[in-house]
Image (cartoon, rainbow, N blue to C red; front, side, top):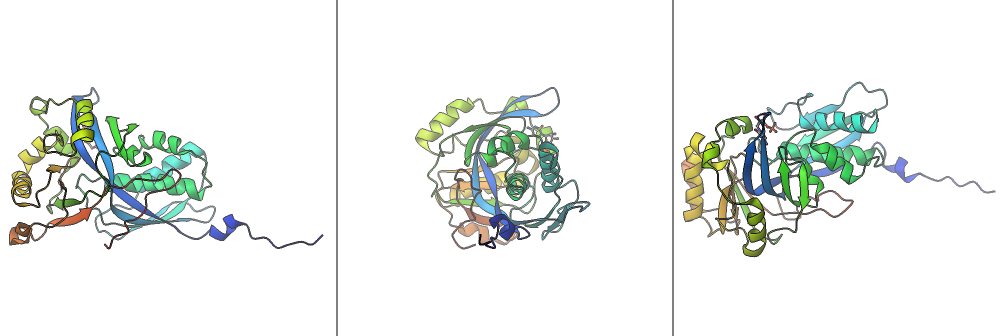
Length: 315
Ligand code: C5P
C-alpha cells in the first residue's frame, strides 16, 4: 500500500488570519414603543446593513494563552473587557464550551457616537469569526439568538441585511425584503460631536413621539420608498434638543442637498443619512463644516453561509 502524504485543508488555514469586513447599519425608521420597568425602551425599527465598515483580522492564539489580545488603530477605543469584541469572544466560549483565545486586530473607519452601530457590527463579526475558526460549532440562528445578550443592535447582522427589529435591544429579528433598491446611493454626514445613547434616551419626551404605526411604516416603505414622511426617528427630538446644530444640518441637507428623497438621523445620532444621491453638497465646504465626517454608502446584504463582503467601489 502506497502511503500518500496528504495535507489536511484545515491545517493549511490554521494559524493564518481570517480577515473579515465588519459592516455598520442604518435605521430607516425608528419608533420607540414604550419605556420598560427596567428603564430600557422597547423599539420597533427597520434596520439595514450598509457598506461603511471596519476591517478585522482574527487569529487563534496558542493553546494555554491566558487572555484574548485586541489591538485597534483608533485612539480612545478601549481594548479591554469593556470592548464588545472581547464580550463577544467571552460569550462565544460560554455558549460553546470552547476555551480557544484569539488575537483580533481592528482597523476602524466607522465613527463612534454616530448611530451607525460600528461597535455592534464588530461584535457580530467577532461572533461569526470565532465560530468559523472553531469549525462552526454553532448555527447562524444560534449566533443570532446569543447576540442579544452582548448588547444592542447586534442581532440584525445575522439576518441577510434588512430586518424589522423589535425588543429593547433589537434582538427580535424579522427578515424583510430590502425596502430600497440596493444600488440606492446614500450620503452619511456626521458632525464631529457624537451623541451618547443613554443621554439621548434620558432626554426622550415620550409625549412628543410620532404616532405612526411601525407595521404601517413597513408596508408603506415597501410601496413608496424612503420618503421624508416614512423615515421617522423618535430619537431625533432629544438629539435635536441637545444639539440644535444637528437639526440645522438636517434642514440644510433637505433644502440645499442633492434632492434627496429623505434626510434623517440614524439610531441615537449624530449621523444624518441622505437617500437618493451621494454627491457632497457645496455648502459642506463652508468652514463651519470642515470637521464633518462625510461618506458615501450603499445598502448591502449577505449570502447564506457567508459574511458581508467589503465594498467593491474605491474607498
Ligand atoms: O444598549 P446600549 O448600551 O447602547 O444602551 C445604553 C443606554 O441607553 C442604556 O443603559 C439605556 O439607558 C438606554 N437604552 C434604552 N433603551 C434601549 C437601548 C438603550 O433606554 N432600547
